[in-house]
Image (tube, rainbow over all chains, first blue to last red; front, side):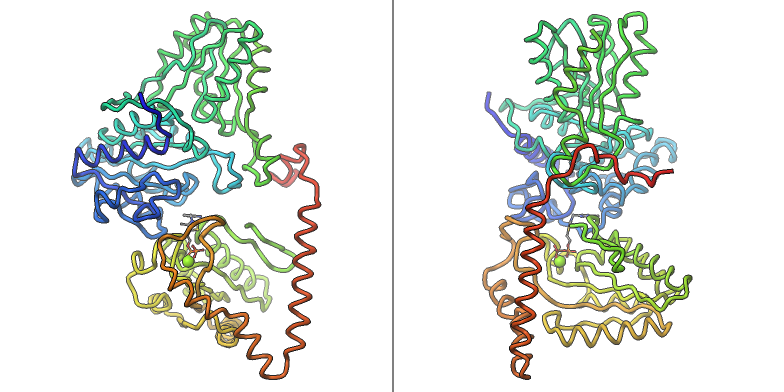
Length: 324
Length: 220
Ligand SMILES: Cc1ncc(C[n+]2csc(CCOP(=O)(O)OP(=O)(O)O)c2C)c(N)n1
Ligand SMILES: [Mg+2]
């Protein structure tokens, strides 16, 4: 199998789906032409599909999402790019009050084959307004599918599934993962929405981690292995709908769970996962479920402060050891 | 990026395109309510005029005749996207008609033209006649960010704008008027000040991680 970077995998997913279905098109800021997007996800696509299908928009997030929604309910399958997921705040009415609810409010008449892609997270010195992890906002809104891929394989397979899905999908990439590499098959494949993956099998503790934190969890698991602790690492990949079964069956085996995400710990998705485990696997737990998440602060600009705002590998190791 | 000094009335540059425009309108409203004769100058790029925040902000300022001068630096591109791709009118200043306020286009590389237009707009705002939209045509020499290659524009275009550099242009004008020595003195002072500031930044210690949560809230 060949290696691709996360950004190449996303690019290939879009290219394949645009070739397969002429209704698929893309709109967003600076995505067209030689520039090919702030993070180069659409590089080369204008040359291949033309400017009608790879459309540069004004800096107008509300109409990027709203126009994509209007196109989606009238027969097209748009992919709307938000350059930074932080800018979803500018488009929140169109996402939350419109896209998420339109099918329900119209008594099931419409389908909303809309993908809203963008990247979040810290690590690049992009500061408070360009570094947030906002997935919990979207998880709280019934009607939105929420996906957070961590590997190139998952990024490609899940993006293809998202494009083919008839519901609005928040597809949340991570700025620190674009250049990461992984194996991606030449032949076509899909990753199903709503399926978690065990990224490392283990018997002593379950670490549930999302996005960039998957790699810190895997690093922590290696460190723990040296101390004789065998950690299982689960990446939910899709937050809504959440694959409870994969998480619960792991916890039933390991009897301990730590949830790790970069988003602010308070009111984060980890609270939902921890509560779910305690409701549905209480008798299997040997220790309370522990949550690790971002500190309750905007992401600071200074690299020293930025690093200390989110969970580290060492903190994951320490959290696991405290549960044993 | 977030350059600000509230003691000087500088409310801060913004990481969100057009995010500062409604805030400027609020500062102008506050100036009115507090009974000062302050006028707010609000700066943004050509790409900001297509945000809802721009329309909402300018409309409200116009409807309430608030003392704001909206200053658009039109350098023809928002990141890589040329203004003609995303903006349908001939001139950005033409937008002003839709809000019933003056819209003025000046050569943004001509210091005196900008000064004169700003003086008029500020005077009008201070007299209670409401906002104006002032557009300065200019260019960005560098990429949108450091290291961005700028493949979307031609070398010829860049060179022609470099030839219109406002600084030597104005310095030349002043020299003609016999102010050459004064210009050199000021340029030297500014260079020293910038170097001192850079040295201060480089020599300052990195922040203590213990300060991470400072300023999230006002203590209460
Ligand atoms: C709401 C929002 N959308 C997108 C961006 C990303 N972005 C930063 S600057 C910019 C272009 C701004 O263009 P302009 O104001 O003309 O500035 P210039 O590129 O000329 O410096 C974009 C798209 C942002 N910071 N905020
Ligand atoms: Mg510009």
